[in-house]
Image (cartoon, rainbow, N blue to C red):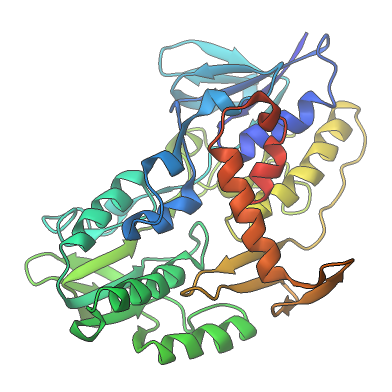
Length: 400
């Protein structure tokens, strides 16, 4: 019996387990998912928690409910991957051997990498919304907000869902208007990039929205430290931005165990062949999702696309066949802005606006409406434990 081991029981890991369980014979291959945290977080929902749109029940489930049938699930902490010996060392001292390893350990925030970010203002004036603890604390902070300077800040790229900070700024603007606090609040958007977004159409549309909503933009701001005493963020070249409430996206980094394993770069993102999703160092290791060092956006829709080529390449690898190269990665992202969301659909070469296409009987159906429907479907699937619904795991994962 051969072993396919998957590190990570998030979107990427469970998606690959679901695909490969249908492709590999159960009498020949044991598939095991290893994860240290039993809790599954629906991270796209974190954006809505501060504003009371989503609650804890909308974003938290147990990971074991998402594990496909015929797949073993083990909760344990990884110490390191010992790739030369085809095994994973656990903190307990035990070893798990593998014939094929899939690394899907994702990315996490690393506020400790910015001087002062975890200082006295953390949790009182400085918050993140990329963790459940952070977004919940921010919800309580906003409930007590009476006005002042609200700063939305990105530390550095890449981050999970690069458009999420902009969405937060738009939602905050709407939330403040609804509560009669907008005129008492200055909203500032601070980014390390030269523009508010990487794609020209995105810059055009989103830049116009920021101006229309009176959201001040500070570009080329490379943070050096957080001054907790004076409630300022200070850039490496001395620029300063005051805050009364700082909503920051800290540095995103991969799993530290991958760094200890010698498989990753200085931010613990695993060195991955951009075309085949195979480790650049070890042919029996494959990587996908946020754990990779690929230049593609870190989002679930990209992971879903990667999973298709990765499934084929693992089968090719097992059969000792040449690996396939993936096409140019693309992403579809629905940008929240009041009650009129905007669809960004792009890859590295092209980008489209809110395209419409005809449907029989229903007539024109905008991609905005299609994506709105997908979100509602996902929220229902995520929130139910009905076994018949679990069979649609892949739909649920790809719809995010």
